[in-house]
Amino acid sequence: MVAPPVSEHHPSDGRLIRIGYVPLIDCAPIVVAREKGFFKKHGLSVVTSQQPGWATIREKLVHAELDAAQCLGPLALAIHHGVGTIPKDMVVPLVLSANGNGITLSNSIPETIFDEEDGFTQYLEENHSKEKPLTLASVHPCSSHHSLLLLWLQKNKVLSHPFINVISLPPETMMRNLAHGHIGGFCVGEPWNSVAIKKGIGWCVSTSVELSNGHPEKVLTATQFFASQRPNDLRSLTIALLEACQFCQDHANRAKVLSFLSAEPGLQSIQESLPYSLSGRLPSGGLHGERMLPDFHIFHNEQVNAPNSLTASWLREGVRHSGLLRKGQELKKDSIFRMDLFEEAQSHL
Image (tube, rainbow, N blue to C red; front, side):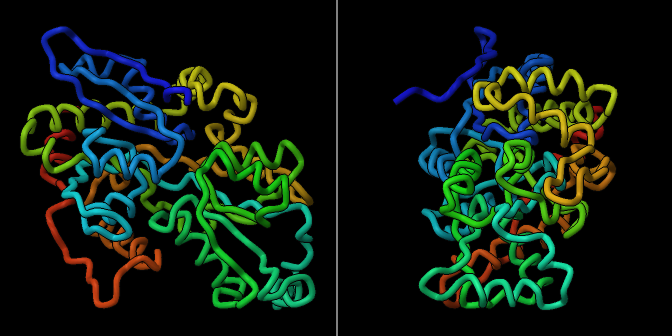
């Protein structure tokens, strides 16, 4: 097995911080903090470790192989409460991004069915069955992608339709599964919608912006053990990544962000599809040409980065939508969301 790509920045007198991430457009704050030297600027010794998917991020956090990670917001909460996994106390001091996802359907699903009020229901009943359902994928049950997919199904009046099956797949496998007919569509972060559309195997039916504009997406999460043993390092890590988020949000810097992402091992082979969402001009495929969505990725503004009560509420709903809660299990309000660390980071920049 080939080891995941690892990049290191570690002054000789510092203890390493192990940070995991998944190669997507919205891993940009992690990559920018490394490449622009923000980690080093704030006195940190960091190893960034690229992972194939969110289940791997979860397992490496739970088993102490990572100190911190770019993480699906609801997944960080699920790890903390032991939803679908061994419980591990976590903290979330920063939201790294908002929006960023799309729903892409196979070309075998006609766009015109959505012109009629019950067109999708009719399509399902004519083309699928309980034995042969329409299978749709999200990246993890505890994710905004899963919540957005359910919201889109609800809007089309087929949320509980017996001919629909929702599964989870790692982001980079979505396009192959769509191309081979194993799934009929997916909700995933960029660049994988653009890749599928540009390869002519799918079309985009909806996006984060259209379904729930401004929803929290990826967060910085760290183990409580790391937070308690190395509080100064967590404080500095939050500052460095907030500075990276500010850099990524400035559209004048997007060309530089793109150059950093294009060099990432998990993105090099599809670098021709990376500019679309960063520029806010997304291909839609099919009959619709192009979407103009300047806020498709939001890395920074006055509200986005704060792990506040509104963010906490959205992330808890994401876990509730996962279907993984045990009977009677409740998600209590707790101290996972560290507004104190966020506010301190803000005061430094």
